[in-house]
Image (cartoon, rainbow, N blue to C red):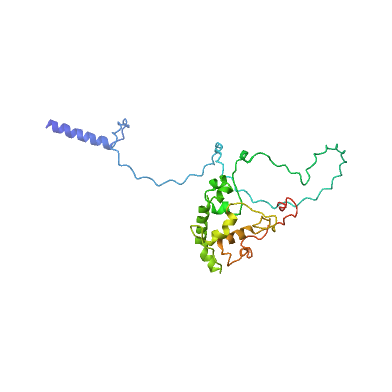
Length: 276
């Protein structure tokens, strides 16, 4: 009971104290503990662009670049037009006449027209390399050239080369007789034993192979040989044509070969025409 009264008395005293005059302020209480950290707020809006900065200073100059490779050379330009000829210069003055030279020594006297110098060695002292009598015999109808050149006319007369001559004539007539007949000409005949008309009319001229001359007869091929004689045309007629039918001048009358030299021969020694 006493306890209840004490508690009731304490309660009344506290109430009176609370409703009575204000007492002095008490000391500040200690700070409370920090609260729990709240969640992060949302990002704020972007700020406005800043003002342009001042331009930067110029950078230092870089090192110069390496030289480029040489280009291909350009094509040559076209030649320019030739310049005009310059004016002729004034003629120079004539030089002074030189002094006359000393007279030369007299030359040896020339030979007169009849003075000719001939070798006097015997024939055996020379080496024969060619022999030629009638035209075209050694060159056209003889096949053993070296033997023929070393032989003598006496060997021709002995018949050493008659076989070759007949064989060559037979070949020529085999190739040409049809053409000769077609031209209205009559070929002479060739027989292996030499009995044909070709050998009969040509033999006296070519066997032996010499150029014959009769001083009592008129000069002219086959009696000698004048420079303008148509010797090849006459020779071909003798070995190809029957001269009892066709003339020995048949080919020369065409003519078959050039009828004359291209320059006129001289009337006096050396008779041949002057060279070109």
